Image: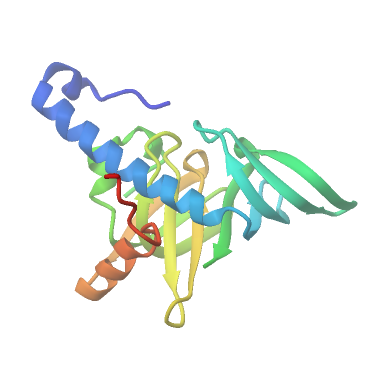
Length: 94
Length: 98
């Protein structure tokens, strides 16, 4: 994960501001992940690979996504883990 | 602004992009536009929202490691800000008292 900045380490007031901003951003992100569960998501991956799957969950450090019914070019994989390092972006509708 | 070092900006700088319409270049040839809802402080991933019909929206998550460039296009007006901030609130507030 991403460490605190050098200024924040030296200045407690700056650290508190930074931590507050961090928590607000993270909370919104987690709520967004929650809203993604059980929805059809399209993943845009490297080498122009586009796959569709039903989103399940992500681990806390966002290294892997757990998905179901992953539509690959050679068939449907019932359950799968996608490494986030292989993903450029993903989209879904609410 | 060139932001190849987007993951290194930190929470305070990321917050300054929230509620703005941005254009994000990612990977080799992807480009996304949308209102920036938040940036995950762990993975530096951006969450962009594109509003369609009332009650409908499309959400794009761009992974922090793939970001090449982030450009601010415009600031949100009051209505868009409210719509953004209320999009992912829990459906019913839970009471903690017995």
